[in-house]
Length: 163
Image (cartoon, rainbow, N blue to C red; front, top):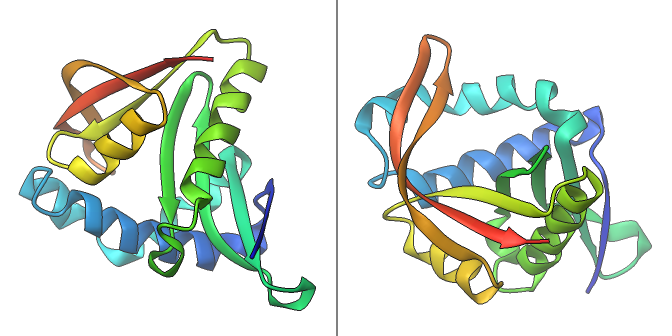
């Protein structure tokens, strides 16, 4: 399998939204306030993606040139790695590691010496992944998850890495 990274385009919207919706449910349902789960409907992921295309890098996985498909994505804004998701069928393939390395590169290119990200406290799979990738748990805090009506505080851990 070959993995290629590129800037997301509007044509990737459905693939990004589908991966984000599925992955968000896997990592957040049961780990974030029920109030947030209630407002993160399937439709909201498709509504949010178009405004985030400029912040998004996609990973294309292929066995040959004709079979390339969006297998994951990362969203970076300034020094924050906001989203990292891999499609279920590509988890365990190394794509997440490729995406997080790209996010670290982008944070450095943005002029920052340290990257950070938030992980829901109960999302142990993600927390283990970041720790294996050299990120350090800098402690618990409440991340303000943005909604149409404001924000909802989500118990998270802030992870940092010198880039």
